[in-house]
Length: 275
Image 1 (spheres, rainbow, N blue to C red):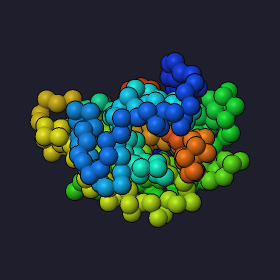
Image 2: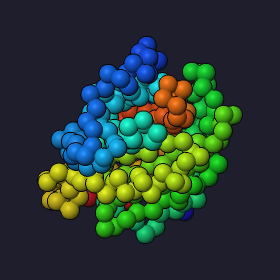
Image 3: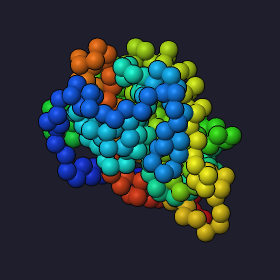
């Protein structure tokens, strides 16, 4: 059982609801159309298959803001179907090498309890903006870690007055930090989209020198482990956006970004992952 005590601090520094029309932004993006290979910043690559498109970090932020989502500056790119029926957002936390010592001892019940606490804090911020509350229902996909590919994934189901939301997250561990990968889709299509997402992500690779296996003694090591990645990730839970009415699809947007959250996590997680 985890005994975790920390505060979810909201560091939403400066934001405004987008003045740009979503359809206009969509049309102005410098899309890279597949088949192609796209650079996710200077850290990784993603194969963009036929029928998919890629946007760089700047255009990704413009798109997300047009969908009334707060960005945090960590966005490196977006890949999705040409009509954005579903898409994937890439962000990077340069927090150091995360040890995977907890891979066999993830306590799903204790982690979910912390996610609920984080959701309560998030709802206070949502209320200030006139957004509906988002309440945790439970796991859609319990947390699990793949030791071969060094990626952690989970999905939390939420309920709002507008319906059900599924927030699916994957974390790809790297040498200098963690790539946050968020699947954005209509929850009604989640089960059919998930295999396509996983197939798409087989084309994701860290660049040479950035891979988890390339860690060397002396590299920065994160002060937290796998459980903290889940609890921290849940603080940026998915919310509905209004972009769907412009392109004929219901799209789930990326929610409130919690800047510097991982740097504030201490106690249990820090002790678990010390050098």
